[in-house]
Amino acid sequence: MSTESSSTPIQPIRFFHRGKIVDVSGVHPTRSVLDWLREDARCTGTKEGCNEGDCGACTVVIGELATDAHAPGAVDGLQLQTVNACIQFLPTLHGKALFTVEDLKGQCASQCKPKTDAHAKHAVQPLHPVQQAMVDCHGSQCGFCTPGFVMSLWATYEHHQAEGTQPTRQQLADHLSGNLCRCTGYRPILDAGQRMFDLPAVRLDTAPVVAALTALKNDGLDYAAPLGARVDHFHAPKTIAQLAALRVQKPGAQLLAGSTDVGLWVNKQFRDLGDIIYVGDVAEMKTIEERADELYIGAGASLEAAFGALVERVPSLADVWLRFASPPIRHAGTMGGNVANGSPIGDSPPVLMSLDAQIELRRGDTVRRMPLPEFYLDYMKNQLQPGEFVQGLAVPLAALRRQVRAYKISKRFDCDISALCAGFAIELEEGSDTVKAVRLAFGGMAATVKRAANAEAALVGKPWTQASVATAKLALAQDFKPLSDMRASADYRLQVAQNLIQRLWLETRTQDALSIEETSVWSVMPHVVAKVAAEGL
Image (cartoon, rainbow, N blue to C red):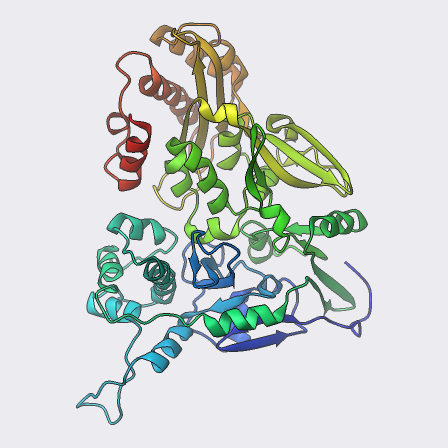
């Protein structure tokens, strides 16, 4: 943070909203998009429910210039993705477009003919197909959550209209997993998601939005606003070299990626963040590509994109991908941020540890790597030095050829924090049942995500049999002394962890391995069926 006077020149936050470019100055860098919408822009359709990204009442859609016309979410030159407005800081909108439920009325005004109503004095403006379908199917009762559902459905509507497809009912359920409703029981909302494609189409005219964003020419943002006698800065570099230099210059500044964790620090813990360095505009940090013998995932790649790349190569990870938080969280949050956060119940680290991932750190021009397990020192403590940041993650391609499984245990199926998350990988000697290599990584079992060294040692070099599994399960008690908390007791965690090793064996044993339908109560869900078909299980 700085003690400069409030007269310091301020570069405004500029973004597209309600058909025009908006310039915003003077608001604090941690002001949320939701608060700006409701209190400043007076767009009160977007609601505040939980204020922590869980309920979806504040769902909005962010548009960016599409760099790949064929990428998921691309719609006629724009990349459209849902996010939670309550935890997104306003400066992160710089150079982007913001769409809210109010925009749907504008779409209909330009494309739909007013209806004549015998009971109305004036012609009635038709609703957008998404909204009309909600009315037709009785998808709204108290109505508080409805704008969030509408925006999630609108994003789905635009994506499928652009592709000339329609979502299945299960795909709709997955898309809406970040929107909670306490009234309807969801069936009529899913009905509306199917009904909206039967109505006359109303599409977003992306041309003026693309033109406006192109004219903005986002070259990075250095924004500042006063807080009492001091001035807090929001830096948004555009290149990784700029980011590295800025991080060395301001090692005490708060790094910000998707704001899915840091946003809660402000909303729930009322933390004072001071100066912020935002990595979300650094394109190089979002790189996902195969390099020689590894899959490289930039630390700024979204959880959705990163898990998508892993599932493309390891279909058995589809379940943990779809159950990781919700689409709005996965669109904003990053895999690098999830790893750097160091939460012992994070879902990415167990999967990455099972794949022998290395973490890549950078300070200035110096880059170093280490195995991911070595990165964590203790609860919320890691190897990062002052001025250093996580640049990327590297997964050996050889590890992707092992038999890989990931299991998430939580109270709810969708949008819940894990009580326990496991990432497993096993490789047998060719032509035998001897264990050549095994990785058993767990979250929720210790102060950090870690591998079960004793259980692994009990299996390596041994036949992959029930007897060996029993020995490994006993050894697991030497690896972990889990705690009891609101999500699970210590005894429950240990027993479930042991049972998951048993499940791994049942699914991968050399004789009579059980299919996914026989080991998962969710096996009838279409995304699991697709995984089975891809793996031939």
